[in-house]
Amino acid sequence: MIDLKATIDTVLTKSTSSRPHEFGITTLESAAEVTKANVTCRVTRLGDMEHKVEIVINNFTLLVDMGPVYACAGMISGVAFARTQYSNVLDNEYFHMLYDVKERPLKYIHAGQEIQMSIASAPCVTCGLILPLRNLTVDHQRPQSIGETEAVLKTFRAFGLTKEGPKGPKGQAILAHWTQGIPLKPALTQPGRAVLGGTSVNDRYTLNELGTIIYSFIAGAGKTAALKSSCMHGLLNLRPVCQTCNSSLGNRQVKFPPVS
Image (cartoon, rainbow, N blue to C red):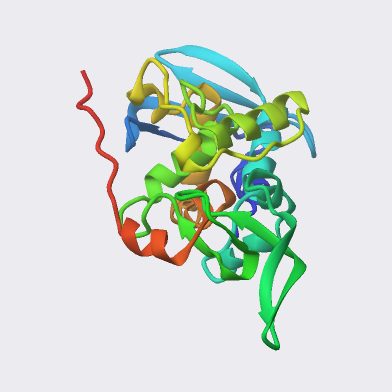
């Protein structure tokens, strides 16, 4: 699990009122990490608890309020899990809301008799079969072997940090919840999901200005590997599936169109 506010603070504390701290701009474009040439982020401390961020591009300076940066960093940290702890997502209240986890009357055979018990259960997101929560597998939506950068972008996109916002029901629900206070509603299982829309796949996998600032702070602190691991095992990249569907999925790589 990564604390992005603390990560940002490690960069901010390198500056003083008389000596700004400068570091490069690193972003994600079309699902690839890019370091911007001749572009720097200059941090100047205004006081013990206040900072302004100056993005300097060819002598043009853009001042950025750290409030939204901290807010988004906190939200991302709140849905991230360590590699050894991601199975705990089954106890996460947001996971329960997104995947329709609730007590349902399920039938069992006990001592030769059919009985009905109220059990915490959820549908498999792939086939829709309702199973007790303990019988569902926590699956990584982006495969662990190849999908860490995609998992970062999926997480950032749900908080409005990519050029084009989320198109899937889970990302849209989380974005509406965090930005408008709309209660989370269950994401539809695969058989009932609409085809994803949008204008540009590349834009969905490219950070916007605020996303670039946050990612640059993380890169400046040397924590991109920790970010990728936390997002890979985070709420946005986890989903409940039955064992049969999980076995049939395997590691699949999402293909991106070439950048025009």
